[in-house]
Image (cartoon, rainbow, N blue to C red; front, side):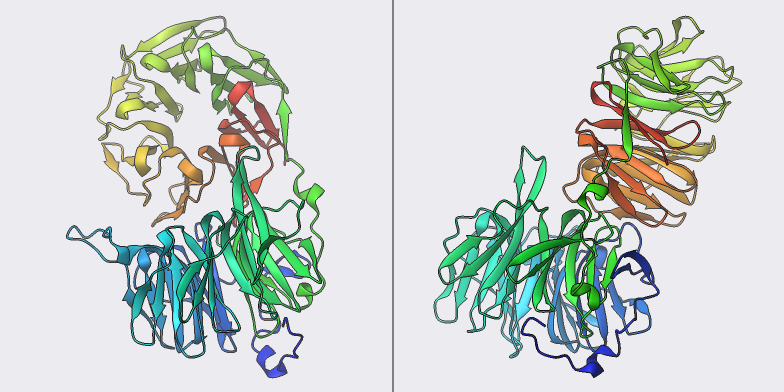
Amino acid sequence: MMDGAMEDPGRRALFRGAFRASEKTATGWHMVTSLAAGSGDVFWDGWADEAGVFVVGDDGVIFHYDGADWTRQAAPAPVPIHALWGRSRDDLWAVGWMGQILHHDGQDWRHMQGCEVDGAGKYASSPANTPLFAITGGEDGRAWAVGDRGTILHYDGATWQPEVSGTRAHLRAITALPDGRLLAAGGDGTVLIRDADAGWAVQPCALHSNFTAALTLPDGSVLLAGGRYFVDAGGFRGDLALWTADGVTKLFEGAAFSRFRALAACNRGVVAVGDAGQIHVIRDGRITRVDSGIAHDILGIVTLPSGEALAMGDFGTVLAGEAGALEHFTPYLAAEAETPRWEAAESGTDRQLWGLWHDRDGGAIYACGEEGTVLIQDRGQWAALPPVGNLGIHALNRAPDGTLLAAGQMGEIHAFDGARWHKAFDLHMDVTILSLWSDGATLIAAGDEGLVLQKTPDAPDWVRMASGTKSALYGLWGPDDRHLLAVGDFGLVQRWNGTRWDAFNAGTEYFLFDVWGRGLDDIFVVGLSGTIGHFDGQRWTITPARARADLLAVTGDADQVVAVGAAGTVYRHDGQRWAPEASGTPLGLRAVSTAPGGGFVAAGDQGSLLARRD
């Protein structure tokens, strides 16, 4: 502990070695795989006592570990749970989205406040539904929770009531001070102090960081952690600061951090966790980044009575840190972690590339884009085919007779005879075809305004189908001509059963830009703000979008799945979970395909082409 006090050996018995059967990711840290979490789960916080551990997250997820097994507990509402606090498991509180406040009495979780619905059965726009993000309290049972728009709620032992904060800033952290006062912190450097007599008062703070965590230190000062968005960096940078009676002081000037999310006291020091798998140890006035073994965002950390720790975050991540690891960490190997797995290739064009298609029979791969651009890679080199006029080309495929097809703007489909392109179909409408699908016999095209075209072996021409939507359809995938999915605006998924198209609710309102699967029980979709979804044959699981770059394309093979998107974003799923990869480019990536002989190829802005070899 931070005061150096010895721990009762009896308190360590439950947890000692409990997570050692987990998958090891780095010396001293282990991925907890015994918890039945999916890659779409996001965990925000945890709480532990001698009897076990609670871990909470999005969709009302609550997992409990009793020393032997993880079990999922029933939650009153399927909304994110952001924070836990309590004097004991018989008096444990949880707060989260839509103002949700839950109480655990040792047996069950009970809804206390928030998640109010209107007459239409939707969550109401009311102060009671203001999202809450942090909670703390005292040994007398009183508690305080903070959230958006300066919201502060106080539990007096009987009811929760609002307190006047004096700010409209979003509050994300709260901690109790040794003298009975409270400190709350949040957006734009907001720091508040609650005096029992005078109420809440805004404190001076010259550091305009968005504070997300606060930890009271033994001397009565408070460590603050968070981050700010920098346009030149294209993302968040982390900040650490110290609050004392004299004000707020920025710590570790000149050091580069990712955004911090949570703090915990451990082994006479502090552990700070955050974005991109970041774990730092602060001890004796120094800060050291250590190797977490992952690249996911870590959103919470809780220390256990054993001296171990659990860190939790994106993509169902729960890491267990051994007690020894909290004293002797494996250093973070920055150079190794940042080495791009993708290599740039010379495309010979600066035109934007919108599509890739792998000719599995012939072994070649094609790219297409602006101003009729079509490229072919054969034996490792990219070369240009004659342009398809001046219109943009978004999709490629082959006709049943082997002719290469190109589709794009103005609803046109062109065919290549080996020397030149000729128009094979013209919709005569200003509608763009965005995707082409084929099983070798039947062809399907989809695009703007709900456009779906079909060409069957027994039909002389393309026929427009009733798609059931007027929204854009960006991507097509299916194992055969009786089972197809098309994805589009506002989470739209349309399903073809061989007879008609019907809506297939994926559980998100974010735009979906592409779809790919290995089979009807293993389908992935990607979209706006980093949305990733998976269908297992029974239900969709959506990874919540949290200020991520747009993901524009997805594909995979038998072992892995790759998604690409804006600002050179690449995510790879290794069969267990998603992790970001360094692409080596800041340019947007708009298409991805498997490559002949293995690996992947991505294409995007300014003619960029990248290759990943396994």
